[in-house]
Image 1 (spheres, one colour):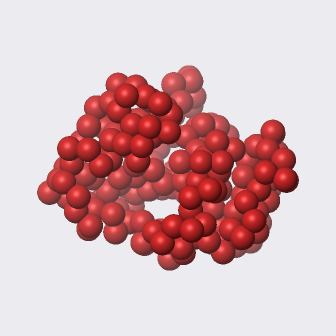
Image 2 (tube, rainbow, N blue to C red; image 1 turned 90 degrees about the vertical axis):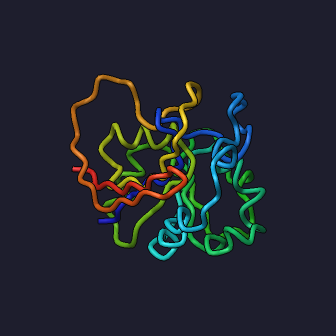
Length: 190
C-alpha cells in the first residue's frame, strides 16, 4: 500500500492557503515570507520530502496554480518528471500541462483509495487544502508534514475540517523548533 502524505506550511491557527502570495485573496497572503526571519534549516524538510516522493497529488485549483510555474522553477526541478495525480471532477485532459511528467486525472475519492492500495512509494500532496480535508475525512491521509509558523491569521482555508468527525490519534514521528519560531511537525495518522 502507498502512503499519502499531506505537506503544508500552516499558521498556528491552522490556515494553510496563500503562504507565498495572495493566491486566495485574503489580506495576509504571503505570510511565510513576511515578518519571520528566513532560516534555510527550517526548510530542510522540503529536500527530505523530495527524496521520499514518488508522485505528487493536487486538487484542481492547486494544480492550475502550480502547473504554469513549477515545471520551469529551479526550486521545484526535482518534481518535474514525477508522476502527478489531479483529483477533479471538472478538469479536462486538454487542460493538463505538457512536459511536467505523466499526469493522471482522478475523478473521485474512491479512485484515490484505489491508487493508495497499489504498489509504489509515497504520494505527496502540496497545497490542495480542500482535497486534503476530504481525503482526511475518508481516512486516506497517512502522514502530515507541517511547518508551523508563529502567526495567527484569522482568515483563510483551514488545515482540518470543522465537521463532527470521529477522533483520530496522531503519533509524533519527528519535530524540531527553529530560532525564528517555526516548528517542524511530522505526524503519522492512526
